[in-house]
Image (cartoon, rainbow, N blue to C red; front, side):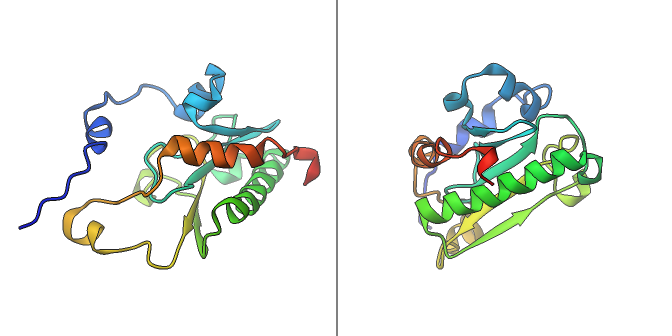
Length: 165
């Protein structure tokens, strides 16, 4: 049997589980690069997933702590939609994926890791990005460092104004 190692994953496995909601606490810290926040809108923001399924895995969330899409105000819903739309365009420009998976997991039974603060996942996909690693070794290979992806995407998000879309 061949052994493959992913030593960076041990950080996630061993880390203490954070109290509170990351979508509430991280934007308050005002350290966007450390917290992987790519863009701050008026009612919502774009943040990279710290444990991504693929490079460029983003999440769009409202600042307000609400559990479900129908709890958003019309203004929040419109801004979240606009941020999702803008994020797709930026990822297409910077990373040229072949497609996307997008979703909102509402409730633990639906797969939500953060149950009480709704957010939209955007996962870029490329032909051939799924291979034997997840099937045979329960390991996912992400071929680009988070900070490198952050820097590439952030350049484009800095050009963005919520008034532009």
